[in-house]
Every structure is written in C-alpha cells, then in structure tokens.
Length: 129
Image 1 (cartoon, rainbow, N blue to C red):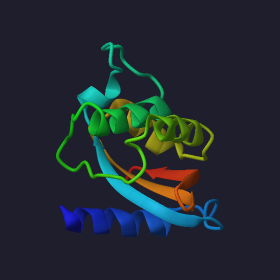
Image 2 (image 1 turned 90 degrees about the horizontal axis):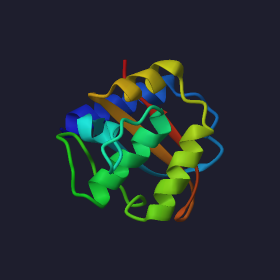
Image 3 (image 1 turned 45 degrees about the vertical axis):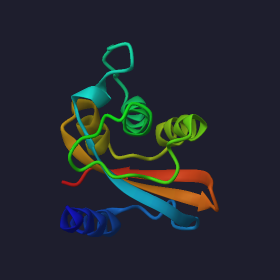
Image 4 (image 1 turned 120 degrees about the vertical axis):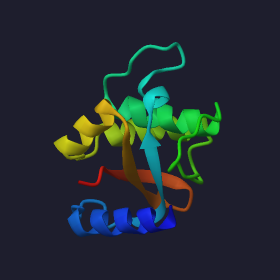
C-alpha cells in the first residue's frame, strides 16, 4: 500500500493548484470512500462530498469502520477538527471530478492538511485520475 500512497502523492502534487502553497503542510492521508462513508450514523445517504469526507473520518476514528487503503491522520479523532474539515472542504476549490467521484464512492482520496502547528487552516482534496 505504501507504493500507492507515493504514486497518488506524486500525481496530486503534479496537478495541484498552488492555492494552499503559502501555508505549511502539516499532514496528509489517503482514504478510501466506501459504502459506510456515504451514509451518516442514522443510515441516511449523504449528498455532498464534504459531508462524506467528514463521515469517513468519524467512521475511522470514532466508529472504527475502516476500509483497505484508509490511513490514520493526526487531527480528525477530535470532533471539532472534523467539523473544521467539513467547513474547509466545503469552502475549498475542489475540482468537479473529485467532488463527483467522492459522492459516487468506492474511490481513493488524497487529503493534504495545511496550517500552523495543530491549527488547520486549509485542506486540499484530490481523487487521482
């Protein structure tokens, strides 16, 4: 699996816009959006990509629902940081392909986290392809 992460990282960095480049990269992870990530804790289907990314991290950290390819991250065990993730992703310039693929599910996603220390100020989300 480490080879996949490096390939995804290289692809993302080659295609990534420079919008977050002025900030410090403080973390990154690869996750796989599976069926459980597409539904909230009540079983309702989520329709927005930012909701799905938040649910993915809640599933990973709180509910111990993990898919092959899901990686640990140092930030989103905290529910407040998951809320920040949702807000930042919602306000980001995520490309339409990535948004569409996350909502469809069954895709790997590369997430870069920018900020200062443990304070998250921006995220960049990319589905390879």
